[in-house]
Length: 368
Image 1 (cartoon, helix red, strand yellow):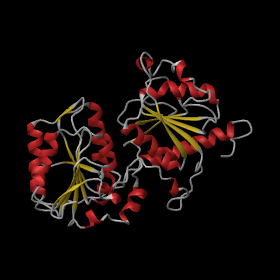
Image 2: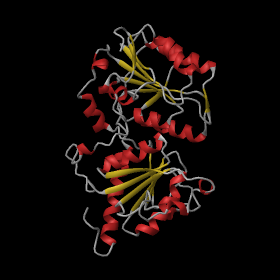
Image 3: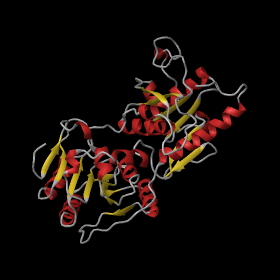
Image 4: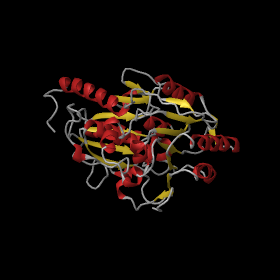
């Protein structure tokens, strides 16, 4: 850290380097007086290793209190081409010693991503009816792939075993954020309040960060600097240099922390300790995590978009969590809303359906 208003966060501040997907088994037990009936049950989380996929699966597992193992799959062609409908390669030797998927079977399997679907289908045959299967995101297959399918509300899929929530699950729910707020990292505690977290995404298949969008962001941040105490800025892996530079140049005169890309991203700490948040509309995960804080969230809309993104952002605006980022901010608005905690809601539905299955199985469910 440099000891002046322009601090760049690197791996030197260990307190801030808590990764969103860290396994927090030490917090096993009831939270806020609420019991978790599936606490300690074994689980496999199956993803293709993308961080956004891991975050969602771990968020649900944390909410349930599961004892989980994260299993990343990377099928080779032609098996990667035929997912989600095709089989798993015989070379993976599922169910046999030495395989990534071998007994003892878990109580619960949670998967997300197209490449994970064939493994869920194979596990249903190998582990039998006592395995409770959860698929996050639309598997693009028939409903029988899982006992429960979760999709975001802006997705069109519906069915008897499909549930929806406005945002995606993650591990940064209100209880976790409250826990983090009880211990403010020194680097953040030294920043004057109110603190603004600026969460930058990047171009994707539908959004473009044109020069006009960069100017809108810069103008908004420059005008906001007159009404707030400091900024906390973090890019993502998709953030282009031009977008980060626009945020950098616009906030140089203000006290701030700006992550320089080395070490762990301080994103969770920034999220917890922000009084106001700005996110780019291209990231559903970041916008949903910001909406878990209960703090005001401004959304920067790049050029482009899609009907699916429009439905997502409209739902969060209707909930009262977000507002469009004005091009110029002349006063500091504050609003409140009920924090969105999709992981908790999904966990509650899994628990309910688990109990129903428990009652139906001969001999009940084995003890964990």
